[in-house]
Length: 135
Image (cartoon, rainbow, N blue to C red; front, side, top):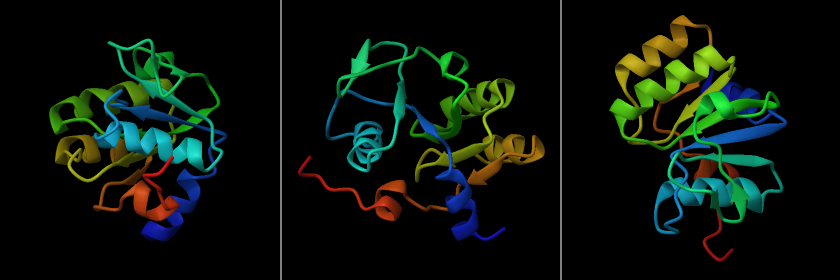
């Protein structure tokens, strides 16, 4: 499947998880969450150390995401990405988008082996959806 089709499939989810969501507005983990919110999409931040990010209640881990979350953005260091992917597979997440810098060959291989739709080719959600820093 082409990257364009993978992205279309990813964006069909009724809600999105954001693993690595950050309260720091300069970090990509914050910008990705804000991008979803700017586009009117339901997004749930995943951060074990925060109660909320950008006014949205956090869950501590991927396994705590609601069932409507079928797609997961991952903005974590590669070694953490591997743990996040393992949780996503166990949770039944269907689509994973590893933001540039979060990719891990082991995580990509595990997600593909489990039959997930994986975007890990350097594509950036902020570019695809058209993120605006002003919001």
